[in-house]
Image 1 (cartoon, rainbow, N blue to C red):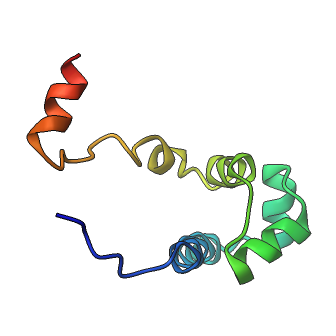
Image 2: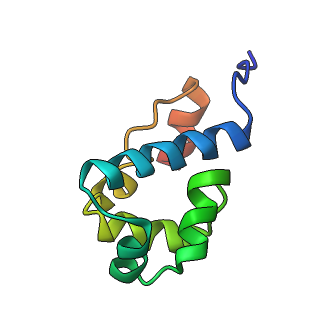
Amino acid sequence: MEQLVWETAEELDQKLAQRVRKIRKRRSISQMKLASMSGVSYGSIKRFETTGQISLISLTKIAMALDIADELRNIFTQVPYRNIQEVINERN
């Protein structure tokens, strides 16, 4: 059975950017300060927060600067099996 996709990739990217922005603001960190802390350019951070577009390495650097790298580390750690065949495949 195929799952329905409720969001586009772009919408998911935008939601991720909004979450990161919220965390940045909660911690009273400006975009310029985050750029300095993370080594990611100010323009990249600004673009990420407005469009959701960013490289994975930049996202990782931002997460480390905001002390939320564990969230990235845990992102795919508890993915449920979709069917019994996936369980069998993993054991092989």
